[in-house]
Image (cartoon, rainbow, N blue to C red):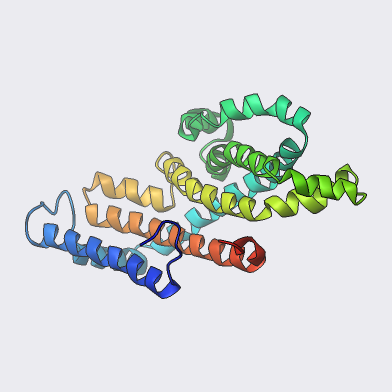
Length: 259
């Protein structure tokens, strides 16, 4: 191994798969071997059987669909509003000076702390859950996008002015394209954070969703169902992460040059 030396795609896949195999092997050894009570930690086989029952008999697929819809909806609203504001803050320093102190303050506020207020304002419906995801995603997106745009190479900006570009042309043809690969990575990372917010939102006052199922299972000490719900979240998150990476490589192939 050498620092920053790329790993072939096949080797990367094998190494990643090996960790999962090792993880499940240790889990099976601890639980099936009787080292931990099944009341506190279900074994993998029981978890899979319970998961199949949830999907085929208890309508868990509907819960999964509701959670995915909430994550995508809340994150999409946050991204649509954060992108233009972040670009403006990164491009124009007076706008950054106006918004940045409040954005920096607001991004440290835990989204879960707003749940009691959001229940009062929006009730227990979908608006409350979408709002939690929006609050948890929007402020981080704005600040990270502003930083990405503001870090554009100055020589490219000067070259654009030299070639006759105006201010709008520099923003549209230099700053945004230059920061686009990093912005795409920012969206990928913050989407992962959105999953943590939706589960918190569904733990309180929800009648559907993965978080709702986990809460009901906790009351019954059904650790097999709880673990299955957590694994489903991880699998969906992994799938969305891989799709984001694939799309980013397709759209910004030039960004990988020199790496």
